Image (cartoon, rainbow, N blue to C red; front, side):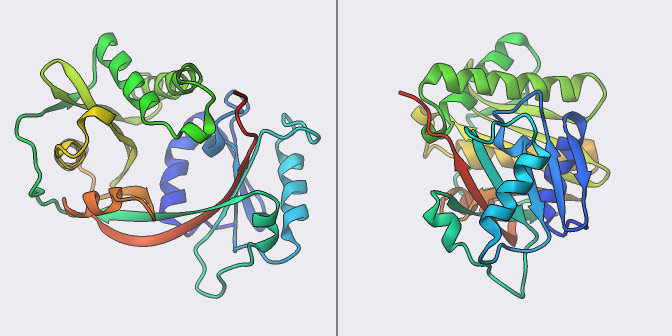
Length: 274
């Protein structure tokens, strides 16, 4: 199956370094058995949206492909698909079964503009030292969605695993990119990753410290990191994805990104224990 979604294509640029990518006739499987709790490391991309009757079929295929999940006690399901102009899909049975329908906007930029909220007092740089990596990990953990984690400790352990993975990705030669931090003095108040392949670059996990929001951190960080990507990585197009219902997309547009496509995903996960 061919993947037409730019967001999913650029996801796989990164996934292929740590995950198994299995291409079937009408779907693609991304498997990360070493990180079974990572939803976007273990999911299926279909060629078209679901129709009535697909719930049982898709869940059955999920268990056939992900043999390390317990059929009787699944931890999560995640299904997404190529954007389709022919059909919006039928999500009713998934929603009745407790799934959430997530909508994401893929944005792209070939040039940049400086936001009106650009914060010149911030210092944006590549993360290099162990102390900076630790600050970046904590910042990412603090920005995690609470619905997935029962405690900060759980969120931190997940963030540490992902950040260690990204650090290995850029330092062992398997991938190309950097993690950037926005610093206010010595404190990291925002962070993001960029990885690239050829002339396409992709942003990963843009997050701002909750005590420093509405200070232009996000727009400044994205702008300065994107400048590096264009100048040093020689990319021609940068891609990022934002929640369709979240204000972040407007922030990205303020520095030159433009909405390119809308993607959808159906997600279900086992609620964290309290």
